[in-house]
Length: 391
Image (cartoon, rainbow, N blue to C red):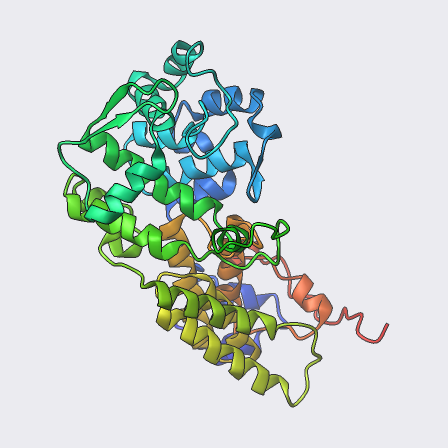
């Protein structure tokens, strides 16, 4: 027998509540994403634990890298590529993509002359060859050619080795692998501080207010060039930007980020009053504008879900949270870097579950007792009586 939302809500004070909604499985995530959330790296590559152990024993965990450590960045780029179901060698390129240093970064984990046999034994000859070439070419030069020509040459490119100056041939398939890696690389590491640097604000103090990046338009053009090249079968293209077929306009990117940040900036301390509804509606309007201008983002949907929960618009909140989860799972990373990927995924799933329960707490204790993302995780009702307001 189907239990109505109204009936489910009436059971909040009873242990029967969770039983009544047990049929609602919450928002599922793909098995690869669950493996990422659980840090079960061997699910993504059976040899990953051994490779990660060697990488962890290098200097990678001690090297600063944008919003994390170099080790974290390498692992997250690799996990994104695994989530996109890329070939094993391309994924391993992502895992060690700057291990020999490269034209963008000065640090390294392995020596490109002495350690090549060591890396080859670790990841395989094909993956090591990709890593070596990727670390030996001028990445900026290749990206600019690809962006200018709006495709990847099937015949490949004759590049120059950045250290020796000797010619270095890069096939079309290798160049496609480099562009694919770059899509994940850019999505993982970019946030507003780099956008400020690129705009000329080289004195910007790290990390700044941690606004989202303004690099997605450029990234979408790289992905479209990958699509145009037809080197990679359509079914094997990364699932971002509508499987690499869509391009994000740069003006839309700026407008979407600005609208999102306006909504976020309205979320400061404000006790629930008669003005709360108006504030939530203003936030929702800004978030809808953000999603309209950039339909590839998960976070505007997720923040919208919480605003809709405040307004007790349960169906709309569940739909928004679900949409956010699906977009996050397609990317395998978050756009808003203020919180890590797993936090965004689990928060969105938590919102969706609360919407299914037709329940949103209005006290400090109630909100802090949230956490379940599936009905089986709810051991008891929310602790809504615990409030520190006025204390």
